[in-house]
Length: 115
Length: 112
Image (cartoon, rainbow over the protein chains, first blue to last red):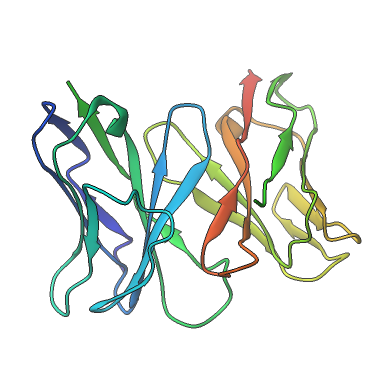
């Protein structure tokens, strides 16, 4: 059973470009979470999605950031017009559904570097 | 807002030593989670605690959910080189239990 998959693992973008980060949850999981991690810090919650619905986006910056989890295909975190401050590791986690909150399984992350 | 404070920030120990780290908060958490993150990887769940006073082991790891529900500790016995990594505590936000609040981590280095 494959774990959470994220791609690309590393992404370099120039300021002003768009970044698209993909997350395929574990098989059978319908809940996806995105977190951001700055160097030497813990993870910061960004958004929680179920299939075709955004449940909680309280951690998402108001501008330039968006997320989706379509009926078919991976979840996408999109960052428009990237700036240097967007450089970070972005982690996706998935869970099987209503259940214990600890059951979030993380992918290996996408390291975004904005030059 | 809710915060989790981890100590120590970093530890340098000899192989074979026992390790203890803790996590505290000024607010109550109903669940305490301990994760380990290795360089270039995502966090891996080590132990989940769901009841105040609960003591749970996973191999050489033992974690306890504090009675006040405002703290938790993680112990590693007889450390080995592969224990190297950053250990994070996390807990669900009071407003949304699927949103995890994270500590800043304890970085562990083990000298063989």
